[in-house]
Length: 247
Image 1: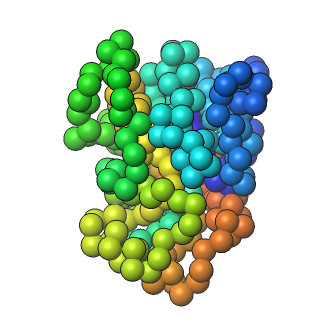
Image 2 (image 1 turned 45 degrees about the horizontal axis):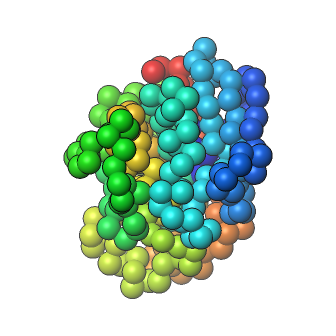
C-alpha cells in the first residue's frame, strides 16, 4: 500500500512487525513532502501480509519518475503482487465534495514523465505494457462492494497527475475537466504505470481534500489538504481494511 497526504495514520491499523526508514537505505530517495513520514511499515492486516509506504516519493521533490517508483519496485521484489495506491486529490468534478473518496477507474498520464523511459528490464516487464485496464476490474468490484457494505457513498472517476508542486490554475483545471478528469494530484499515475509493467494488480482510491478554485472560489493550501485527509482517515481506513480482508 502507498499512503497519500494526511492518510499516514492508516498504518496504525497494521500489526507491525518492523519499520524501515527510507533514509536508512543507502542511495534510496527520501520523502520530504509535508505529511509524509518516509518509511516502510510491514506486518499483517486482516490475516494478510502487507507492506506499506508511509509517505511516498514525489517528482516535484526533484526526483525522476524512475526514482519516484523505486519504493514500489522494492515492494514488488519483496513479493507484493497487489498494490493499493491512495492519494489526496483536488476535485474537478462539480458533483464531488471535500471528504469524498473516489475510486480510480482510469488515469491521464500525459503531463508527467513515464517511469519506464530508458532501457527496459525484461525480467520485470515487457517493453510496451498495456494500460487499457490499468486498474484491476475485479479489485475495483471488491472496493465497490466494501463501500456498499460500510455505507460509504463512493465516487468514481478519472485521475490526472500533474508535475507540481504548484497547484493548478483555474484555466488548467477547466482544461483538465474538458479532457475528462474528475480529480487531479501530483502522484499515483507513475506508480500505476510501474506496477502494471511489473505485472502487479493495481487499484487506487483518492481522498478529495479540496475542490478546484474555479468551482469553490477557495485557494488550496497544503495545510488544508493534510487536515482534510486526516478528517477522512477513519472512513478511509475502514474501507481499506474491509478491502484487504475481502481480497
